[in-house]
Every structure is written in C-alpha cells, then in structure tokens.
Length: 374
Image (cartoon, rainbow, N blue to C red; front, top):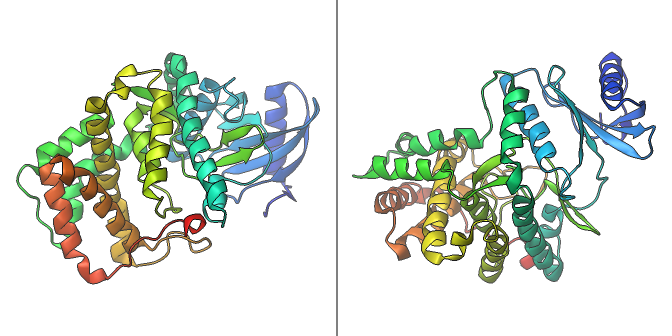
C-alpha cells in the first residue's frame, strides 16, 4: 500500500487488536506508512487516548528478530530523551512495537539534496550535535538495553549490521582479491586491530545505529531520530566517523565542504566528551577516528565492491545519489587521506593504494558536493 492508504485485511486487524491489548485501550483507523518489506508492517493508528501512534511489526526471520530486539530495547533505553519516538509497548512473541507518532516532515537528506546551503549547514550541525546528545542522555541505560535486547532476542542471533562489522573488516583481503589485489605484509594484524577497535568497550555510547540522513525528522523542536533497528552501544568513534565520512552505509552520499565536515565532527565530539573526557584529547581522538574510518571502509570493501563489480549503477535510482564505483573509490580515497599524513596503518594504506590502482580503469568521476553546496 502507498502512504496513508487505509490498511485492511485480517493481518492488519490482528495487529491492531494486539497493539490495543498491549496499550489497554482501543486503536483504530490503521493507515500503512511504509511499503511491505518481507511481511513487516508499519501502521499509523488513531489512539482512543488522543492523537495517533505507530505500530510496527517485523519479519519472522533471524534478521526480523534482531531488528525487533534492537528497536524495542533501543526505544525503551532512549525513552524520555525526546530525541526519538517514545516507547509505548512491545510484544516479543508477535515481534510488535508500539511507539509515539512523530508525524511527517523533512529529513536531513531532503535538505542536503535541496538548494539552500545555509539551511543545509545548520541542519548538519544540529543533526551531528543531536547524535551526540542522544548518546549523552542514554549513557546510564546500558544495563537496561542489554537486558531487554537479550529478552527480546529470545535466543535468536544478533543480525545487526554492526554485529557483522568485525567479520567484514577481517575479510577485506578476500574482497580485494576480487580485483586481483594481493594482501601486503602486515595486513592481517592491522585488520585484526581495526576489527577489535570497532567492538571495544572503551568509549562506548548509545546510538540508533543506522543514522543515515533520511532516518530522522527536522522538527520545530529539533532533530528527532527514526529507525532504531540497528540500535546499540558501540565506540563513539564509529558514529563520529559515520558523520564525517559522511554516512558510511547510506545511499545518500556526496561530499561536505571541508570546513563543514570538521565542524560536524566537532559538534558530535563536544557532546560525547562530556561522557568520556578523554575524547577531548587529540592523542585519543585522532587514532580512534582513523581506525573507525578504516573499519567502515574495509566493511564497504566487502559489500560495496561486490556491488560495484556486478554493475555500476546509482545507489538509489529514485533519488540523486552516487554510482557504486564512484562511491567505492571515494571511500578508498578518503581513508588514504586519513592514514597517509599520520603514517598510520601502513599495510591498510598499501592495500587501498593497490585497490585504487586496480580500479583506475573504471574512470569513475570525482564525487561532487551535496546539491545544497554546489
């Protein structure tokens, strides 16, 4: 069904009835607000207590179990922050979550793909600061999140993208072999170091996980985050790198002006440094950032290189977006610009130089700025 089209059928009625029972009051007038994805359903329902709520269900698969557990536990942990939907109820057997309805509106992606540079700059900085602020206000909720996640997973494996990040990092040499690039000496130990840094408990903070620029709303009261299906605690460097790269796993990737990139990273860093004061020290921050950028880039070398070899197509055919090969090379170039001046992770830097050389025949154009900054 399309946006706001009335949902009908037995399954919708069962979902609404289950959500009503969880809340202890009737919900009505369900309208589907997302396309059906492997039997996942997202409904906006009228609440007898006033206003509307969002009811979300997840596929009966291992991935569905992981998405449900992360979102339910993440929303509950972030409750009261006012930076995302309020958690209202959850049912592990039905894989169903009820949350407050934040309504509609523009996202950061909408603004970046628009034409107003001043508006886009403000939105980026507000968004980056809000990412850090969410980490700060949820810092005391780690025990709640871990307990709820285990409860909601109910024995299913953790299939979050971040849970698989270390494995994809360690597989970078195998990925590079797809374009006949051999592993330089010392690569295995450096990849192991980067994989370990991506899962370290040092400087761990809460994050919605998938902070792609279309997973938020820009409201009159500030940024509100959507989609907690990848929520969890991980090193602050991973979100900081996600912000500055930018957007390590997203389709909506163009370049920031250099000064804005630095300002966005600083806005996030200022917030998380209030939780972890060591992060204000460049001797801690800079090596952590380089390893986070390396982790995301080596991970991309797994999934994005495979897509690039299959076809050079837009990341999102329905929106302005880079082509796969253009983005892959941009990721490698960006990592090299981080590592070479510092002389850090020399084997990974050598691997990336070889990958760029091996794919030079792609003749992929340079990644441009976001439309708002052109």
